[in-house]
Image (tube, rainbow, N blue to C red; front, side, top):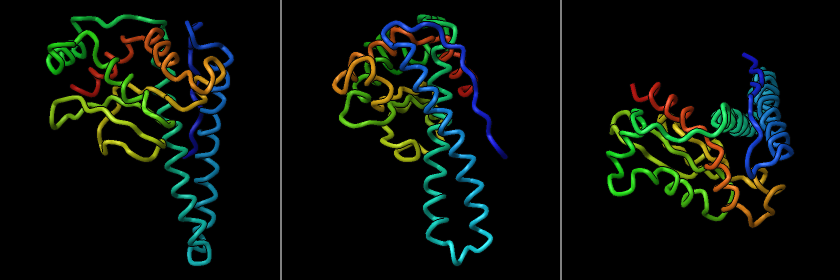
Length: 199
């Protein structure tokens, strides 16, 4: 199967420039293109798997990296669609947050992901839902294909690779970018996503 890049209806963002969004979407398109190309090449090389064993192994590693970049960016960009919206306190998502973080429900998971995303190095700060434990999990993925909570669906994806903020804030501006990310986040998208996976 060949994947096609999605299009996103992203409004003007406060603190994240149109140029950054344009460049970032271009990077996303590259992930889609590269995943398709790597897949095709790997299948071609597998016609002689013994001769091409090393190349196939590297292509398979690269393939999961490209796929992770594709899917995480699709989650990331859709979180801006429709414009910034606050959390609905009556949503299933908000009620679960309040249950897990009774002392600071309103400030979570923003503060949690800000702390995770603010660590040194590029990657993704991700909020997951564990349907078995019936609770949120959060983590940092240094690369799209590594560091994930296996099998857990993503509720919220925060890109903290330099390409997400360096044009607007410079190499040291990750914290300001994270603040801008949450300022522009459409929590209704997150709430709908959570409701669809939490049942």
